Image 1 (cartoon, rainbow, N blue to C red):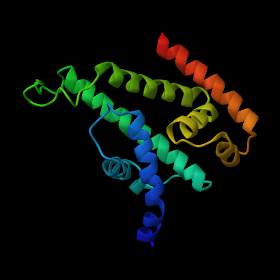
Image 2 (tube, rainbow, N blue to C red):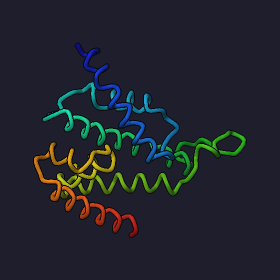
Image 3 (cartoon, rainbow, N blue to C red):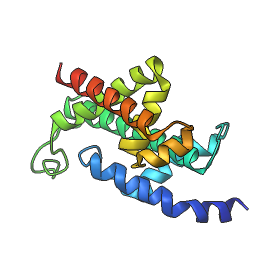
Image 4 (cartoon, helix red, strand yellow):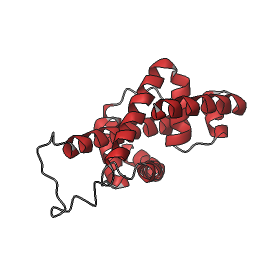
Length: 169
């Protein structure tokens, strides 16, 4: 039964992973399959999630994928800054994979801000995760949350302004 369920959700998990990786292309050289496997190892196999609907499940998955990518960005920043004690040089072939330390720092910053937003306003954090990270439309988010499209749009605009202001600081 678990295999059948996994085969059913795999295409959507893969689509979410592709979307996440396209936005965070400097995080780590991982494939969508590797991201899903890491997600599975860190979160899904533990269980304990309270899932209200299919859309809610995928929103939770998007949040978990974002956290995996943030952890990978932190690990890469540590390596870039020498905490990993691995020398990086052009001869090692690392120059192409470490495209931008600034991009990694921004990903980590977004992760920290999303954690702060989650504590401050979990609903706005959920909307941001579903809209930006999972790629849901306002209509789909409204169906999942029971809010109106206008309420979702308003909260997203507030959240976007809040994130941009803090990222520019």
